[in-house]
Image (cartoon, rainbow, N blue to C red; front, side, top):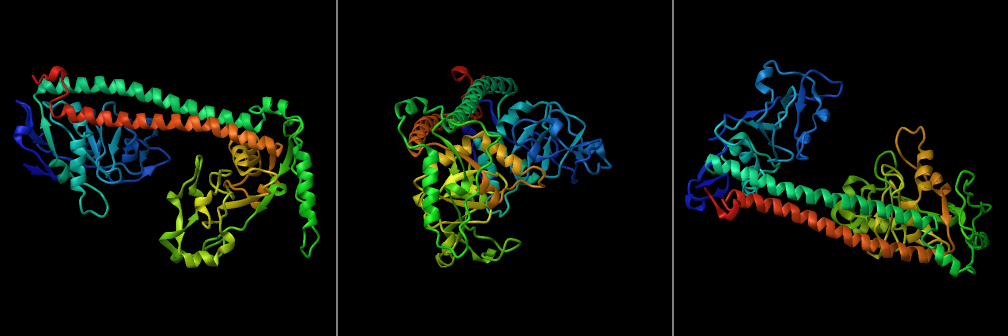
Amino acid sequence: MTESGVTTTAHDLPSGWTWTTLGEISDKPQYGWTTKANPEGGTVKLLRTTDITSGSLDWSSVPHCSENPDDLAKYLVQPGDIVISRAGSVGFSFLLSHVEKAVFASYLIRFRVRPSINKKYIAYYLKSPSYWRAIGASQAGIAVPNVNAKKLERIQIPLAPPPQQKRIVAEIEKQFSRLDEAVASLKRTKVNLKRYKAAVLKAAVEGKLTEDWRKQHMDVEPASRILERILADRHAKWIGKKKFVEPVMPATSSLPNLQSSWAYASVEQLGIIGEQVVLTGPFGTSLGREDFRESGVPLLTISCLKETGIDLAKAEYVSKEKAKELGRYRLRNGDLLFSRMAAVGRAGIAGDSLRDALFNYHIMRLRLEPTVLMAKYYLAYVRGSSQVEDYIREVNHGATRDGINTKQLLSMPVALPPFAEQQEITAEVERRLSVVEELEATVEANLTRVDRLRQATLQKAFSGKLLLNGART
């Protein structure tokens, strides 16, 4: 037989099993109550798709209805109800156990499985690969993915005899319990790796990673002398019509003492902030939406700056012709990018692959004096220094939204080691973090493997192959 795009035949099932549909084993499905969430509270809660998609339900975070239904009893949820999302997270289902006084929202469809059927058996099937294949088939050709009650009623279910239903559920939960333990352990490892990365960066920018190195290199040129030389050189090369203005000095009175060969410098002493491409609107008219393309030269947005580096998934694109017009906004290999809004202070290095890419108004570009500060050290400093967090918090004090402007960034203090020590620091950080990245990749691979094992478990369960020793009776 063929239903919802899934073909099955009777001989596919173990002896005693039968094919049925969700509609045949349930009362008539029901759509939820249409109203908005009331942030001020109320008497009846409103269960939404977003409240169940994590796989668990926290009633304390479920909002109340702005307007309660006249026929309240019709929409009140009960233990044993199965709700399925018909839009958004299409097909996602949830079996309610403990409930509060709540109705279910209009993007959910409720199914009440008949008492003779094990509700957990059905709930697990609604997470199986066969079910998801049916949901995928039911969405074919629909511009906005969704399902309706009629399509869900036709979803086919391989129904085991009642005693086997109970045994299958018990075996699924036994195996899932083991997998849950594995996931919990992997997640703890992820947290510990994140803490270790933070500890490495903190130790790096405080000079603790290079304590032994400094003892063996007492004759390196101190950072203060490098600063003096580069500032003198910048002054000597000044050819502007106006008088040369000395870069702002960092405010260091409240900052901790540094290693003897280190010095505090302001960002303005270390490099030059470039101009930013601005979009049509309050920031200017350099680019309008009509200039964007599906592909071409990438224009980095603030969403491209991630904790782990630069990601082009959220980039915009413009034509090569438009990019030529915006030549002064092009990136060079080694440019530092600094977020000035939203995740303020997030930074990344433009590698050679981003040469000639553009960047928008929410990002500031910093070009460093190459003989004073290494880009990789600066990146480690931004990510690992508590002074950076404190500074950004201070300049945002009293602001209605987070943000940092060019003047504030130029004034930000940076703990500057001797150039040779910066090289040693970045090499040591990269060595340690490369090990962490390998471990993180292994953790992610194992988490993916756990997901696959869950699906494999469900696949076996609903083909009659999960019970011990292949027993089906």
